[in-house]
Image (cartoon, rainbow, N blue to C red; front, side, top):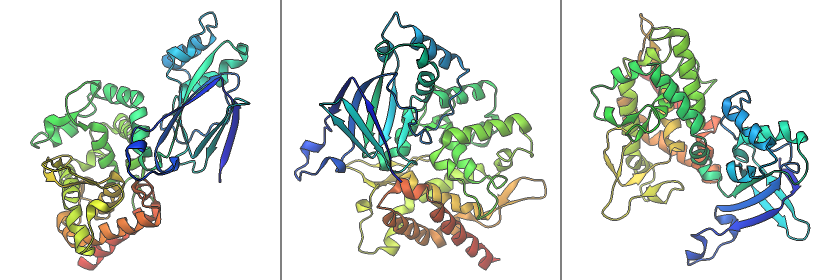
Length: 398
């Protein structure tokens, strides 16, 4: 169901898409991501901008939130729109009336349309704007359309500060020790970064999101799915830190229970990532994997590298495909007599047997969802089908 907001802005500009005019075949605006900027009096800002798309919880008691409110109320210095990053909003459509100065913003899918960044700024404005008059403070609004397919990456990129802070605090509190111990003999161990400005190309948030895929304490069966691993890494970090605070490095901690098979998860991820094209060709003998929406082909004389073990690849697969497939192997996790998680069967053998079927299911589901890897990555129906596929194969093999 569409939601529409209409409000007055002081100024409005469209930023041309740099790729649109380079295409030989000209297409309409809706075929490209579009960027717009508006400056709005804080008094005119709507109070019902959709917020479900913002991955952060707005805690207005923090020092950051207090500074935003102080800056807003400092009307003797009318520079709030310059000092503050403003709001970032994803929308289905944006229309501006030059005559009236009215801006119309249309939200169609509230999973991907709404506030992406600037949640604290928005809440601060709503909380304090009654204390100031019209014309005293303005806020910058960045509006993006046509970004549904890259929404998860966009939200993650625009919302790093709280996540980095949480990771950094957890690192200072030594909450990643057992992860470091588990990967100490792996070739990628020095590529993992645990706090801001550390060297490396593997975010500990990615490791934690993969561990969350196999948390059978929180996701025990086919009735609940760790989709949050794909679309909510900040939430995964919260889960991890909460469990570590409660249980430390003991077998009561569901993440700690994974320590004996943890490296298998990363090897399994890489095996899926590197063999996606092979599994695809087993089902689509005349198809070209690089033509699948969301898949990127390597340029001539270059190769992609797999996430953990840096194996060369001709194609880069979207995580919207990889995470549900990897998560389906949660069906093979059981607890041993000591409470630790173990495999009920060899996951690598199962992947060889089921890989082509899992890939076919994922590709076909993406096609039914408008060729959208992002949509298939958060589609519970796809997660369930993949999980049941692995679960049934396990039952047949016992």
